Length: 425
Image 1 (cartoon, rainbow, N blue to C red):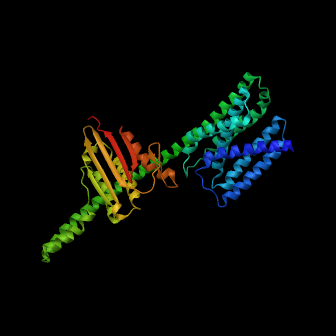
Image 2 (cartoon, rainbow, N blue to C red):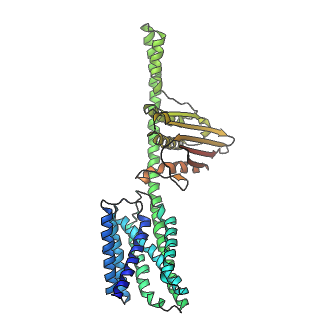
Image 3 (cartoon, rainbow, N blue to C red):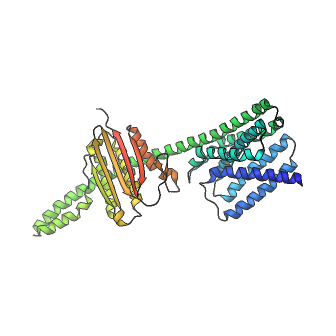
């Protein structure tokens, strides 16, 4: 019985550490209905099977490999059973969680062996430090809706690395750790394992970052093509509307004079079509187009937009960049005020030249709490990749002209400030 209780304690500790490590990367995934029951059953099954495996596989390195490999497989199945998660994402989180637990375990055991310290007082602080550090550096960057799928070759390579480094090497070298007096041997066997595990986890998130940037680049290119198409379409549409409005006013005056209509009636009829004519003339056609397009939308949705813009000041920017930059700024503002009472649906936009700097300022009311990450507001949409691209596009276009941008929520007002240096002629 004492041996069984010892194995039970080992398995409970091991499973809890594994599950906690995986939670560092699972926080953005939705839980399935009946999550508590599902999770409790999975935990019970993992503890039971791990305890039995520890009992049956005690001894050889191969038995250690078999038991820990089976635990990794159970961890993978637990993710699929309890969370709304794809197979590839479940494999990613299981691999990352297993690597994290291994790093904390090896670091703790190395300190215990070197300094002959008791296990429990060392395990807990090392676990907290390692888990907190890995969550801060990697886990917290996983956003809701983010696809963690790597290329098949990469994820299989990572799984092989984890199995080889964390399981096979650990099981093979463990006998050399049993003698605390052999400090040099302990360091020579444990430290390489620790370094390899850290490099494996770093490689995993480096591949994820590369995949994410590649996907964002694809989306950005698609948006650029879409912006170019939308700009040409909006420009042609507004030009056509302006021409028709001009012709209609001329026809109204001609028909009115022939029908002996009063000047007041003619003026009312001409003013009724003024709303469809271009609303802004800033000196920059691309800026006029996007402002007019958004202003017409705001009029239909009872949103007040106030704009004071010197369009000539941004003559050095391409039409597509202007249309995209101000389109994203105004779309974000419109989205923020759409759910507010009508008296609070106010948007202010200014564009001015101050010395050799172009100042672009936008402000609008908002409700709720705006979370910031790396200086950018975190999108509340489930589709983080596509909806979060707007603010990143603003940042990208500003950087292209050697400018800087700041997003500042505060006191119910959200501020966007951009400074762009005027290039030398």
